Image (tube, rainbow, N blue to C red; front, side, top):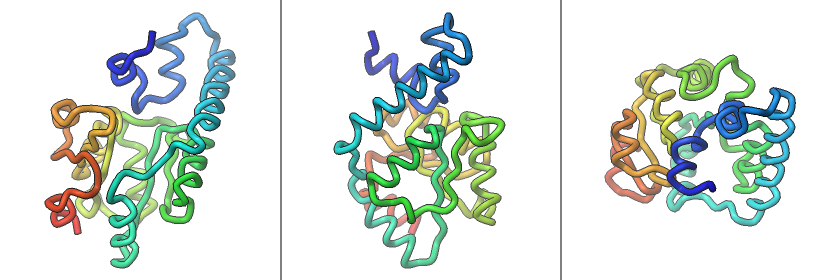
Length: 182
């Protein structure tokens, strides 16, 4: 039975290949790919009208745009899901680049996805800030040397700080956070 603790431990932030290997080791690689595709299609169908931005996100993105700052998405989500979520939130033209782990040799928790985003943005790790909600994502961003803020949508503040986040927030409305980064 899948519960929140098991989700946090074995699913959150991980790529499908690793998830399927943990839960269904008897599946062949090909059967795992088929299962993953079906699982993700089900997600897109069920989430269609449920996705909403975290409070304060749109204000933060408007500020980033007004100031001419760069913004990227770095995700372990499958490509179809990443595109779906950006479209569902009307953010498909907001981020460039969108770095999708399954297009790289290694995904999160490896630093490569964030290093790729830095390269594509043409900035250094010292010039970046990351907002991450998964343990794998925290490891990836911190491994790339980027100041990382844990977002407590899936994991607790204590868990994300233990993984290496510099601080945590519940959403993007916290005044102290906005003053720190803007």
